[in-house]
Image (cartoon, rainbow, N blue to C red; front, side, top):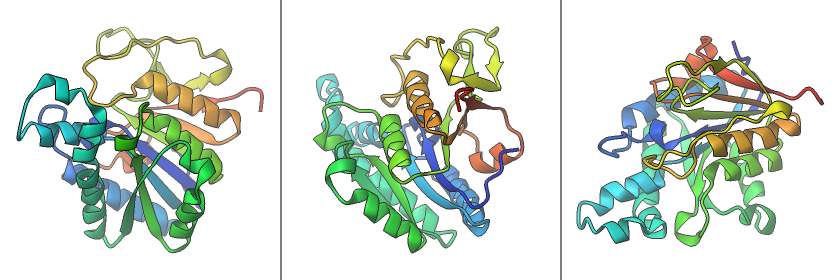
Length: 253
């Protein structure tokens, strides 16, 4: 069991958790269970910041209502503009159903150092407002929500960094294509030499490689870091009931 009491926790959810992989629709029933889990975390003395992917997938869904020109579907800035507002509103709306106030933020990597965004996030936490963050996709040329989450994690001095993906943590190979892939309960970041093939069909822009890079950076500065499955309902509650996950370790600390 992962103890989650009196912690400052960053939860990062990938697109395959947030959106239906076939219809690209936002999984509101899933968000509601996340909200219930987060409410329990807060009642146990934790503070929570959420990073959500899914802006591009939501944009693709909305764009297809009007036009299906493949060239325009490759324009991530356009897709982000079409998807981000709906995505963040759905989080806010469904958190309200359990009595929690959430607020959506879209930020860029450079904003952490050049604006007062970290002060704003900390002020929100003081007042019990849950920041729900995604990259400011319309204004960017590169996309890495995992890296942004890691940057904010370091800046606010979080104590737990939990990345949710569509597998039970890290394996020696892609478990979806290799049934003999072995699950890693512990992963020493100083021995990290596992290579992952990027999935060209993935809904977002990250994948396990991006998560491992972001997670290892955070573990190196001493913050507890976990990679686990976020697809099922109540992903945080599942983690607390010993669902499979990968805990990163650093023998240099």
